[in-house]
Length: 560
Ligand code: FRU
Image (cartoon, rainbow, N blue to C red; front, side, top):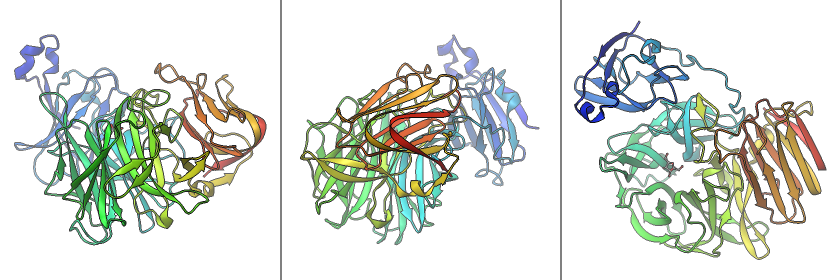
């Protein structure tokens, strides 16, 4: 039993909030035994504050939608860091004392407490067990393990309280969820960033240390956020991180100044950094990952500027079938995507360690679906590979999609390269070879987690449907060199006006084989030769059980 002391403490600004005086209350929970304090959440409730206080010190402070009238799901407050170190209390503020959460809160050791099976939970795409996820962060490969960090709210399935969650995989298909890697601190919450393997120990944390570079974002009392670039390091291969005591390493006056992507550039024997600042990308260089020299900016007059530029990446890639290499700058943008909201654009050109020059002015999208954002690549991938993951959602409705205990999954891993078509160079996007090794022969029937490989002879129409009459129609028009996906009748669509759409993509050349990755709430349509990619979420009331292909031959694989 928990001892709960209710104290309706009038707080100083109660006077100013006459209409909701009950919001100015504080309830103190005295923990008993068990590692986790399970906080009941109601998504429609306003955010309250949950603080852990020891003596006169605040140890942690999170915004939590504590349930007032009914409970949607539970989130764990992990008390392990505070236990065995003296008395501490959990203090809940701005939640009426009569709220249901105070009679439902539970403390125990059961990590799976109240975990429900959700029908839209993906089978083979990475998604957190509970809580909210957005951008992939800090991804790197070392000693046989792929590390994926991500923007994470452990205290609810809507955006907020940004932490870095952590998952690892040895095959890019099966992911293991690990403990949270980075928690908010006095500099702010943990926004997006990158991770590198510091082979030479340039940053001073030892050879082979992992250096994570992230944005600390802190709201100011005057409105807006202050964003600063910070470092954390790991000397145990990425299992645990310590923050660098000299943080922050880079500050600026701009309000949108974030998402550092660092990488070793052998051509100048230095580290480079790309940062998203408003509607431009800024480049820096360093020999120790701590002291950064500004080199130049890129953006004005190029690509799409209908939103804020975020989550950059920069890499040198091979142009297929040639001995040429070119640089590609990835620039995620929100809003401004081809079908509204967020999307990933890219620029092809040259980078000499100081300046990026782009060879085209038009806008190029890496994926023509509506749910492909914050795309970045793994550092230190073997065999010179550049493997990207995207967050499969869109800021237009990411907080409203009809899942509950968790929100959002990542795309399948995709290898990036370049190809020439009619005198222009484009980004090639191919499902990583690890996806093919996850295939198992099924019974030839469509299932809720499968890959469908369709050999095409020309124009084709592919229809997925279920017994409720819900359907997704895809069309490849070989003449117009266009692919489209219609999800207007795909199932649950009314949670956002921006959701029911038909997305269309140019196909650079002739598509001979289409690969469809179907999971419980997503469809990724990718040309096997990597010249077209389209990622869309779908929420059918029951799984699509039938596939009709006109103009092609389908083979269905289950995915293990
Ligand atoms: C992109 C983004 C980043 C930021 C993070 C915050 O989706 O807005 O620019 O660092 O999400 O969660």
